[in-house]
Image 1 (cartoon, chains in turn yellow, orange):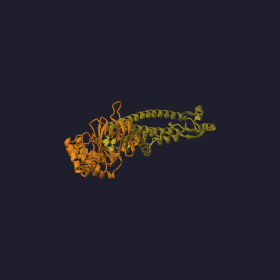
Image 2 (cartoon, chains in turn cyan, blue):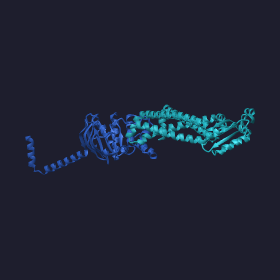
Image 3 (cartoon, chains in turn yellow, purple):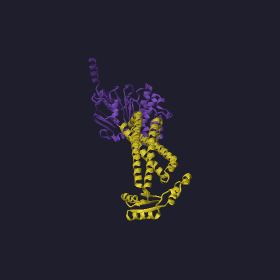
Image 4 (tube, chains in turn red, orange):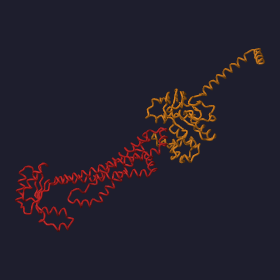
Amino acid sequence: MVGTVAKYIRRSPYQALSAVAIMTLTFFTITVFSILTIISIRFISYFESRPQLTVFFKDAADRSEISKLEKSLEDTGKTSSITYVSKEEALKIYKQQNKSDPILLDLVTSDILPASIEVQANQAQDLANLATIVKSSDLVEEVVFQKDIVDTLVSWTNAVRRVGIAVIVILVTVSTLIIITIIGIKITVRREEIETMRLLGASNWFIRAPFILEGAFYGFIGSVFGGLAAVGIFYYFSPSLEAFLRGVAIFPLSPLILGELIITEVFIACILGMFASYMAVLRYLK
Amino acid sequence: MINFQEVTKIYGSQDPVLDQVSFAIDQGSFAYLVGPTGSGKTTIFRLIISDLTPTEGKITIGDWDLSKLPKSRVSDLRRKVGVVFQDLKLLSDRTVYENVILPLEFLGITDEARRRVEEILSEVALSGKEDKFPAQLSGGERQRVAIARALVFDPEVILADEPTGNLDTKTSVQIVELLKNINKKGTTVFMATHNDVLIDKDVDRVIVLSQGKIVEDRNSSHKKHREEEKDKKEEKVEKKEDEQPKSSGKIKLESLAQK
C-alpha cells in the first residue's frame, strides 16, 4: 500500500509539489497565528495580573499624606491590596528592567521617578469608584487605569484573531479544493487501471486507500514544513521581540508548547488531507 | 456451475443484446461460446462477473444468485472467476510479475504470493520474463500473462473472451492447449471465440450465439450418448440379421434389386 502511494507520488511530482506547497503555506499561517494567539493571551494575562489601578503622586506629596489617601481607600472596603512604591523602589524596578542598557540607567535618578500606589480592587466594577476618590486628591499626578489597557489589548488581539481565522479558513478551503483537484486528476489518469483492478476483484478499500493515504501524506509533509518554518522564524526573531516587549513576561515560549502545537497541526493536517482525498474519491470513483 | 435462466439484456431502448438466453455449464467442463462479433459473447461474460446486471432472468454461479448478490460482495465473486479479457487489460506500467501478482495483493497475500506467481508463470511457460513489461512481449506471451493473472488466485472458473483474437493459428492452438491443460486440473473453462477452426471436437460443450440468441447448443456427452445408443441398435440389427434364414436375405437382396 505504501509502495503504491510512493509510486503515485513519484509519477506526478509537480502535482505532489503543488499539494505540499499549499499545505505548507496553510500550516505556516496557522502556526504563525497560533503563536500570535499564545503571545497575546500571555500579554493580556500579564496586564490582567498587574495592579488594576496605579496612582502616581506629585513630587511634593509626602509619605504621610499618601498614607492618609491609602487609609481612605481601604475604608471603602472595596480594595483587596494596596502597595506603596517609593521613588527609590521605582528606580530599582527601572534599573532591573533596563539593566542591559547602561545609557538609559545613567540618565535616570530617583528624583525624576514618581512615587506610586498599586491598588487591587475586590471587584472590577469598584475600580471606577476608587479612581474617583484618588483623582479628587491634590497629591495625585496621574491615574493609570489598567482595565483600559487590557480592553484595548483585547480588542486589538481579537481583531488580529478574526483576521487570522478568516485567512486560515480561506487557506484551508483552498488547500482542500487543490487536493480534491489533484487527487481527482490522478484518479482520472488511472481510470483504466482502477477499472481493471475492480474487474479483477479489488475491493473498494483497496482502490481508495492509496488515494486517501496520499492526501494524508500531503497533509503530513505540508504541516511539518509549514510548522517548522514558522517556529524557526519565531525563534530567530525572539530576541528582538523580547527586547521590544521589555518587562512583559511573555518569553521564553516553551519548546514543549511549540512541539505540542506542531503535533496537533500534523494530526489536523493528516485528517484534512484524508478528508480532501476522500471527497475526491467519492466524486471521481463512483 | 454457471446457470443462465431466460436472461435478457437490453441497453437503453435498443434491441436486446441477449434475448431469453438459457444454458448451464457443469463444474469442471470446457465450454465454447461461439458467435460472430456483436452476438453477445462479451455481454454474457460481463454478466457472469456482475459487471452488468440482466434486464430479465436469473444467473447463478455455483451457490451465488447474482440477483441477490450485494455490491459489497461483487469483489468476492470476481475472485472466484478468473477472466482473460478480450483486450487483456494488462497494466502497461507494471512488469509481468507485477501484473500477475496484482489479484493476490487485493487479498493481502505477501509471503506466499511470490512462490505462487513463479509457479503460475512456469505453468504458462513465462519463466524468465518476470521483469518484462507487456510492451516487450509478443502477442502470445501477453495472452499467457493474462491467463496467468486469471489463474493466480486459483479460481473455480476461467472465462476467456476471444483469447486468440489477434494471434496466428499456431499460437492460437497453443493458447487453447494451455486452457485445456488448465481444465484438466479441474478448473471450469468457458471460452468465447468467433473462430470455428479452434473448436476441438472432443470438447464438452459448444454454445452458438447469433444476434443475442442461442441458435445451437451442442453437448458432447449427449452426442456420445446418442452415438453409443446408435451403435447398440446397429449391433442388435446385425445380430438379428445373422439369426435370419438365408431366404430372408434373399428377399432382402431381391427387394434391393427391385429398388
